[in-house]
Length: 241
Image (cartoon, rainbow, N blue to C red; front, side, top):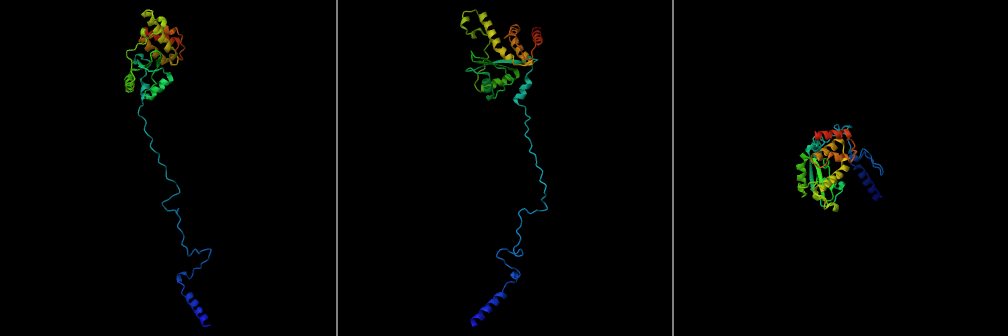
């Protein structure tokens, strides 16, 4: 009995010693009271400075590519009305090159090919470029940069370039005429691809350089896309008048 009375006194003392801050809080094993757990602040709490509308995107300034390119400058040089502004340049080639490979190789050397008419001489490994005289210096410098020789001494109608065994013992005049015919035969296929203005300019260049004759050219009966018989007759009158 004495032992039981001591346990009752200890239980009464433990009940009276509960802190006042926890006296009104009931604890459940599963759910905690909201009055005892402070609310966790949200990460996306709204503030008066934040609005639902997004900020406008700032456009990036575009790069200014208005500097004139070599192609644009070369496009202003060509003048079909002034065929004397064209120049024929001959360049050595080590091997036979098809025209598509030739243009591709020139582009790799950073040479503009839009204003170049290429004529290939497979026998002598030469390539001829009719170009505008204002582009001649730049072209020569670019070729020299890659150790490509410009043949200023080459003449397409030189009788010595004829290697036909049948003409070995023929006179010089006969070989010269044969060289002229060969030159005309090479360029006729190329001339058919040009527009009228370019066609007339190239023909005038060759005629004024005494490389072809208009009467011989007429004998090939070329059907240029835009050159008519009237335009050819006017060209002949302009050159011979």
